[in-house]
Length: 426
Ligand SMILES: [Zn+2]
Image 1 (cartoon, rainbow, N blue to C red):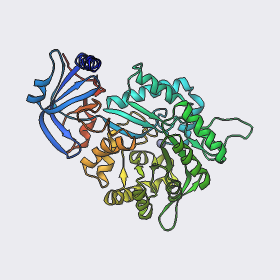
Image 2: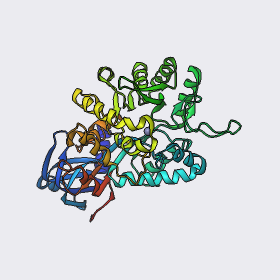
Image 3: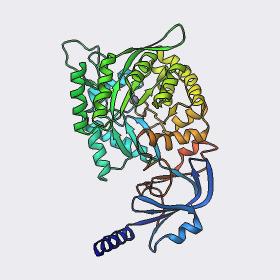
Image 4: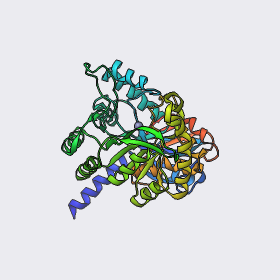
C-alpha cells in the first residue's frame, strides 16, 4: 500500500512539474463534426492535450505559471498530416531534374535540403508526414527522423520508407552508356529470396514502411483505361507483403495504372499511391480490403505537361476516378507527393484539389487529419484535438471551411506541446 501511494505521489508530482501551455482559440474546428466553436481553451501538459473546451472553464483549470498562447483572433485546428511526401526530392518535373539531383548532389547536400523541406512542412502546420523513399539518398531518412526526434533540427514527426524497392531495369537512372555504372533511386531486388533479404535489411535500418514501385510505363488504352507495365511478378509482390507483415511493417504500393493497381490489390498492399487508373471494380476491391488511397493530385496537375505523353491525360482520368471514389467511400488520405513538385509550393494545394474534384472542404481537411492519422496507424495520438492526444495544433487566419487558402496563412504551430511557430507567449 505504502509503495502504491508513494508511486502515485511521485506520478502526481511529475505531472504537476510538466510544463503547462494554455492556448486561447478564437475558433476551434472539430474535424469530426465540422463544428466551429467560439472562444475555446486548450490546456497542454507536457506533450499531451489535458483538456479542451470553453475558455472560461479550461483557463480556470490551468496551473499557476502556465505559458499562454493567445490565438483569440484565429481558427485553430489539429496539426496536419501528409501521408506521401519525399523530403529528399526538390521537384522532378522531368526525368532530367531527377537525374541532376542524383548525379550532381551529394547525399549530405540532399540531406541538408531535406532538413530545410522538413522545416518548411512544419511551418505550414504539418506535424507528421510519411516519407515514401529517399530516391537515391541512401538511408538518410532514418538520420533525419532521428535528428528531428532529438530536436537537432525542426520538422514533422516522420515515418520513413528507406530507399523503397524496384526490380532490375525498371527504375531511374536508366539509358546511360552501358559501360557506366550509374546509381539508382531505389533498392533493386529480384526474386522472392532477394526480396525477403531486402525487406529485412530495410527494417533493420529503421524503415517504418515497405514501399514498392509496382508499375511504370503508362499508356491510355482505347477503352480509356490508364494501363501500365508491372515491375514484379505477382509472386514477388506477394513476397514483399508476406515478409513485411511477418516483421510487423505495413506496405505501400506505387501503382498508377490499372495493371499496377490490380496487382497491388491482389498482393494485399495496405496503401495505394497515385492510383490514377482506379476504376469501379478496383475501387470495390479496395473498399472490401480496407486499402487506403493517396491520390497525389497536385503533383499530377503540376507535372503532367512537363512530363508529356500519357501524363497529359492523367489529370482528367484522376479527377473522374476521385469523384467516383469519394461517392463510393474509398478510404482516402491526404498524400501530396511533395518533393515531386518543389517544396516552395504550398502543401495545402493538395487539399484544394480534393475540394475542387468531389470532396467537401471538411472532407478534404479530414483527409489530412483523421484519415491520414488512421493510414499512418497513429489515430490514437494524432488527427484531432482531444484530451490524451499529442498537443499538435495549427492556427490560421480566416476559416478553412469557407476557403482552404486560409491554410496558406499559418500564424502558429504547436508540435508535441512546443510552440514551434508564432506567439506571443508569456
Ligand atoms: Zn512519391
